[in-house]
Image (tube, rainbow, N blue to C red):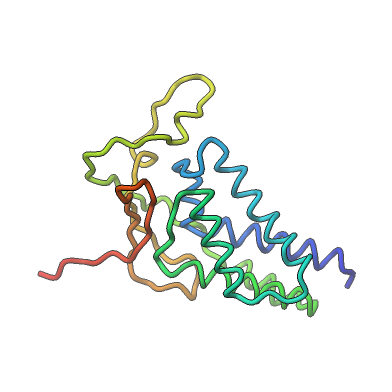
Amino acid sequence: MSESVTTELFQTAVDKLLNSWTVLQLAVMHGFGGCQSKEKAAWLSYAIDTWFKENNHLDPYEVEDFLTDVMNKEFDTIADDGSVPLMAAEICTIYKLCQNNNVEEVNKRIERLPKANIQKSVRADSDEEEIGTESDCLPNGNNSMDSTAKDTDVTMDEINTTAPSEDQVMDAEEDGWHVVRKNRQKKT
């Protein structure tokens, strides 16, 4: 198999992995990265692909640090749900599979990816008004959004089959950062 085919396969796999990552998709949907949130997500896929092309061997902890940094700096989001190490490990695994021309296994992994679970977002009870959302970027000046797009606290499911099955919550911290953490259910 040619190198261009495995390169294309890796690019496709990274795109699909990032599209299945609920934390990133919520950040894009809610405009945490500003007006260019979608473009930043596309850039992230390109940057990961380029980074792997330029480096012979990347460890999952390096990819984890990169993903954490991008989410912090580009999307003002702290993913405290355990998904970043899982995404980093999966990206590295898929890269190795692509390098070994194991197309069948890569395709199986891609097919098993769940969709980002942004539909289960729930409206948060918050006294704070959200500032700088994607609605501020609408060209027609209509800044109305449906109730799910205004949420800062959301419940999320697994990002992939290896993710924890517990519900997770995303909170807006006072300093404007968005922290994703496991939901602590009250026991009655």
